[in-house]
Image (cartoon, rainbow, N blue to C red; front, top):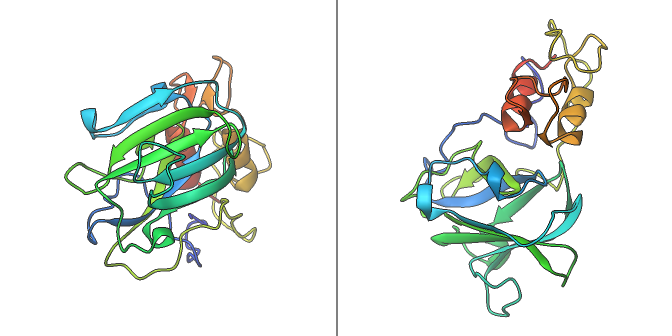
Length: 227
């Protein structure tokens, strides 16, 4: 996770959108940020390889199952991730959780209202690298923020949340990006972006790029002006 200009990353990988997840073999770990968005927020280069279906309004806190199967409740699926996630939290789709060294050709993300509850959203996307897989891709409510290939040996990218960057950061802040007005672009501004994720009224200051939607592009603006 980006920790500021001139500040070395520790434990977690820095986030740079637009980087391929296929340069070090097929994906082994995909770190997703849960945004709470419906399928209309999807943005990627996989075209028809991605299928996204909404079955109900997404909640701030949900139960996510990611596997190689289109049925979230089947007993013999390879489960890459399973757990409770809230808006703004990250989770790892990790082949190692199923004893594999890379993800299968198709990866499914099932978002449930609760453990064992009703399915609110299901996404299928391609993870064999015959289609692009890049940081910044969004599949429904899941934004890809980091990844590891099968030939990389780094440790897990996240432990379920975005780490707070160190407070001892230096460098000029950009006024429009300093949403809290405290003279620094930092974790507090990041929280402001995540708190209003989605469609935003015209006067919404968190819509930094003026698109009418607070999304990963605004998140990227905050990260690139950190300090």
